Image (cartoon, rainbow, N blue to C red; front, side):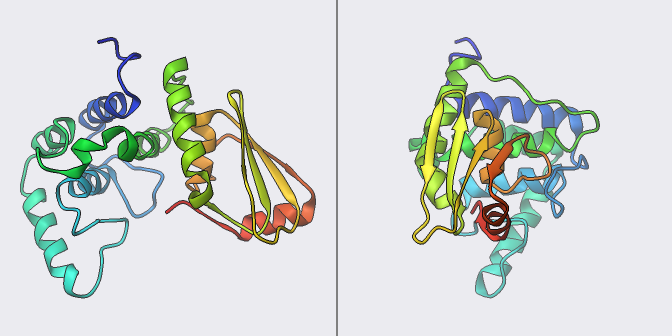
Length: 214
């Protein structure tokens, strides 16, 4: 199967694994709390230990002990072993194996870019037309829960637009970019997303006070 004809989630998983091998565990990401090692730990435990849901900050309370124990066991493995765990995909009985495209397309695209865009001199990648369309389809489905603000937001890509309405909007804005750039913006990656935002000054101020991502 051509890399451009396989599902985007599978393509990004393999490409991210390749780059993790090349960059090493200490490589930075655009998430301040994470280096490449922490990013990889999150992705592995997300698929293998849904009861933990490791994020940039470890949980507190009763789940904390289990989280630290799971992380210690994972960190005892070599870097190559950990990357191979990611590359080989979720365990046989993981729900992520059944909903790979639905659950992982945006997850892996965003975290791959988190790694790539932390490197000096980075430039945006160009996805295939099929992968652009696939990403745009997922972003349209997820736009409302991702973008939470008191203005009406319209995401505008070369593939079309999607409106994210507010209950009592204070104006409206339009955010222009490719599906990749709009996805990164919707996840709050403002420092590295290349988008163009249009709107009146009050609406833009309200937008900056809003919340995005999960």
